[in-house]
Length: 389
Image 1 (cartoon, rainbow, N blue to C red):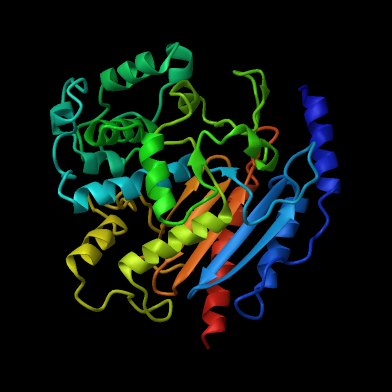
Image 2: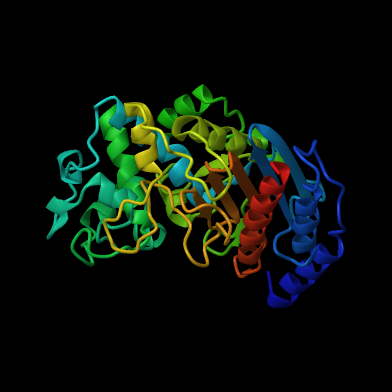
């Protein structure tokens, strides 16, 4: 698609995105403010369409804005499966790690090389799963596996062989390579492919619109992502991330598709594990936890491996300028995805905030979604506090 054609397509998209009525039943007065906020951002070109969904103390509300894509005027909704991108890290991978640690099958502080003997090289003997999940392993952020390798086996060999940039624990660097390794480690440990493990676990949590490798009959419901120069086509129903594609569409770092409704369910599951508390300024965890509670809480708490790092185990926590916005409590936890997705959980408020969008359609050169993520989180916190006054 030429620059001129792309500009024309975007102009047509913005012109067609009129404000939409609120969907669902608000859990409290005022939640329609969020609908207007998202409608305005979509009309301004933040994404072709978006879904915002809130769970506050168990009461749910959602709103779909805009359209699925340039050539599909259908409005997205709470069950629309979006390409979740890096939300895969916390929705597919992290609960599997939590289960394995809780069952005693896995130790976060055991060297990765014990499970993955191919992971060799200077300093790698000190890298642990905790390092991988907190982005403090010393691995570089990325490498173009999709260009360097013809297949999954060769791509994984390159990941195993990638040298460290720094010694483990010295620096935080967000690394997809580390989460690719974590996914392979789980496959070796459990003796099954990652998509099989994730499907089993997510079904047990009641998630029905979330999976790797969505079937063909889902395609019409899935918003398209990018007109991809590598694959030479508009992507719809196949993973946007090129390295995940080279890995067969299944990886620890990307590949999952899922809906806002399912992500609310998933966030509520974590709230049940870690507990909820009082207003935004009150710690949600005043009571001594059980062992199971303690483990879940450790996963969503800053690990402090690298001074100043906001990283928990798999999860991120609020920091200056992050998608959490300025108002979510310090002990909140969440994550984002490159395609335009985000999930934040604030235990002190009993609040789950989901925003799903395809901001990379038809091109990834679209920076407008970041401010919307922060604004949605802030407004949700304000409305949750208003609802309990």
